[in-house]
Image (tube, rainbow over all chains, first blue to last red):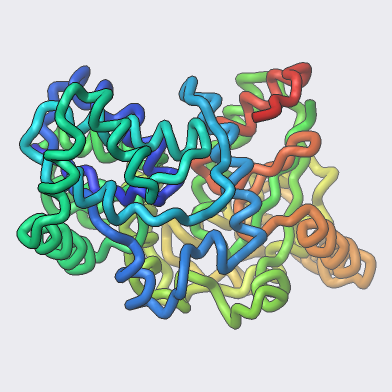
Length: 203
Length: 203
């Protein structure tokens, strides 16, 4: 069964997922699709003006320490950017425009690695274009495509779909009718996808 | 290094931890202490009138489905009680009174299993006394001890200590100066305890 990877470029835990998910899915021969979306509108629906990690400093401080430890566990570099959350809109638009391209997963990885591995600002066009260049594609061409109305509309539709699926955080994984939230549920989602014929248990 | 198991009897994810933590710690030869505490006062400090899972129905609905799946994964029975959160005060007082007793971990397991495995109300004295009887101890004696002023005071001191440690949810694990939150960080906490000499990384 297909696994949908719902992620937001500004999300810390999405870094962990995007950096490791393709390897895990390939190993387990699971079909997948990338689903970039924006958490901002979903937070606003829920009466939150920004990330819950900013609104709640105690949980925020815990999250950063947890991220350090988890990044280390996964062998990832970690550097906290000076601003959080950063604006991931253009990154998400590029990803949306490139969704059918082989290199789009690599692009996402590079953008996350720039942001949370090296503390770079992903709202900076130069950072995004450097990631595109590292994918061996024309950065100007793809940046232009990302700004076209149909790309913007497609990303809005993803965010609307996320809302309709009951997604409230990132990363989230959808397998059939099942929703899994958080990098720490990626393994659960993979097991669910692998056991597509598992009967739905009633408790 | 010693691992502190901070848990609240009304907490769903504490069920998962209490049901499996002793086996994991014994296997890995890790010294541990139980730290029952009350989340209510900590939630109130943070401006929350009840569990975040009640205040936020979307996250609440997700949590119940996640609990079903995770309980199944761990081979645990799961039945959602008709009321949530239940009042775990007397359960926590009994645990506090019995902290030096060999059977106290078994008592905690039985209370969680009654609540989230069979949907029982753990604010019911009869449910707590049945768990004590199943530990082969005198239920009336231990219930009386649990109501003594020094027991109440000791539990209040645990809750104050939890607050001082920056604990904001249950279960939480403390190893030296490290705080881990959530049943899904139990393995991280265990690894941390096993590697007591791990140098503190700077990122």
